[in-house]
Length: 320
Ligand SMILES: NC(=O)c1ccc[n+]([C@@H]2O[C@H](COP(=O)([O-])OP(=O)(O)OC[C@H]3O[C@@H](n4cnc5c(N)ncnc54)[C@H](O)[C@@H]3O)[C@@H](O)[C@H]2O)c1
Image (tube, rainbow, N blue to C red; front, top):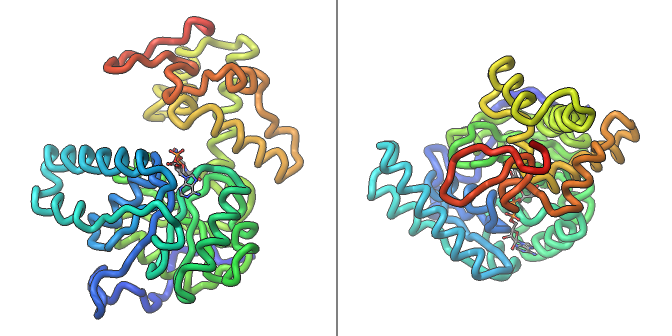
């Protein structure tokens, strides 16, 4: 069993005692993948004063990420939590790259947030391991892929760790930190302290399927879908019971739409395969909806339909 306590003796952080400004200038963080999560991760590191190399194979995605960060910083200014000067320096801290080896060359930490696909992640980690400095920590934002497996394709398994941010990254406080089988306590300490420096609340867990967040969340979402499939209640009733009865800010079906039904299905399969327990078997309705391309918010339809510009929550016709 690895150590999962949150009380650590402070280590020697790579960013220096007072903040990101080390003796040789701000430390460099490379973020791989500029999608939903990557842009948010780049945003919070750059806002905290780190230099960020944001890397994606798609130039269009990099441009979109910069536009999203700009818009989200404006939102913070409107709320009075950021000044125009801070926005400027945050944006100046971010440089974009389309090649992983170039982006990670001088990094102290790499946070990988590319597409959730095991073969892709293993090949990215092989590239990062070859190109990044020897003392660089390699973190993955994966929702469900084994950190131990990812670490096994590198020459530094002790320096590989899960740093699981929540969506939307600039808003959500939690960072679920996942110790792989070989992760050293020093590396865990560093990532715990770094998460605190970003204004987040770190929670350390061990590397088993779904970690904690998704191991508990996904069976709840799956059970909500089973309740709909078996006709126990309709979409609105299920979500209202959980919102008003359990004080959840969002019902499980709406949350599934927000996460993406394809993502929910793939995490449930990881749980089912990893534990060999039929209790994690995805509901046939979820499987059907994914096959039909009804993936939730990103597809315009899941349990609800989503019309651009409208905030109304309308149950999808097929399920009403
Ligand atoms: N979306 C969420 O709510 C959420 C929450 C927590 C964790 N995660 C995890 O974060 C990771 C990213 O998820 P996302 O929702 O941001 O995905 P996304 O599809 O929005 O973005 C993934 C990005 O990775 C890029 N990419 C693909 N191959 C690449 C490569 N070889 N090199 C560099 N970039 C590459 C893609 O071009 C894309 O821009 C996944 O591991 C996911 O499980 C997602």
